[in-house]
Length: 376
Image (cartoon, rainbow, N blue to C red; front, side, top):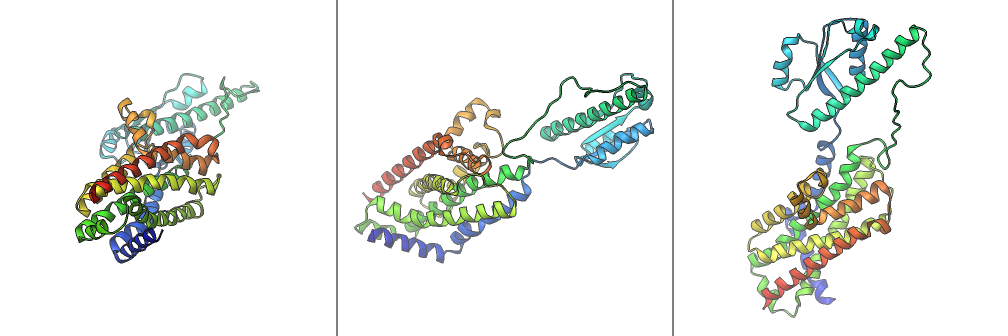
């Protein structure tokens, strides 16, 4: 323990005296949290739309009011019919609604009435959402107008005109706020990136400064070096986790429905694996720049693209789905979102915790072997 304490104290001194490492470990996580928390949103609102009303009737104006009051669309213009293509090409609008002439007369006479919606499909996700919003607004409007028309004709409406009524209840995230989905995932992304990059330069720094030889000839075992270098970053990781949890729950109002104890227990396993990965990269490189770049390429991109942080794993090609099993953030995302949003316990999360423990064990063993070879 005396040797481990000495190495730990030495590593803390290096961190405090290195502004770059201190900035990465303390200020970068908060910056990433605020940037992603505000900038990365899956909610699609205020879609720019232009509406051409050929009918200019009271009924067509009511339909336009339904679009403007929905909160999903911003009516930016009501141009002539010939201007739609130019506005869509320029990206000034994403949806164009064309109400045909005779719209009101067709509805009041119970005829089949069509409203054309032109949607910019260059962004497929926005196009799908905009199409769904438009269809829902027009569908509700149609049902309301039909009910009013039948009522005026003396036909009593005793039930909804739709043959099937859907009553949906959303669990875990009733408001469907994307920030509730993103902020817990940011902890997995930030923890993996920052801890791996930070510790990846630790051993390389010893090589560049020529102090590795002093450690080699000292009576210190490889596992003692690993433990001594990991402890400071574990402490920093817990500080970052507390910071992210506090900002997420207090600032972004993300619900915390699970156990904090289980959260930090899971974090220990996860951080042990990411720090072990950082030591493996550190032992395999000879410069801090290469180590930092290697750590970034093996952590941020896989954690962002292949973990399910933003893109559903089931939607990926089958080959990539198999590759995601090698990304530890995949398992930690399930754990942390389960704790934050669902409030589930270890009885549900244990398979993912076992996968994280296996990854951490393998990384620490590989790091120990690489360091032992360096000491030989």
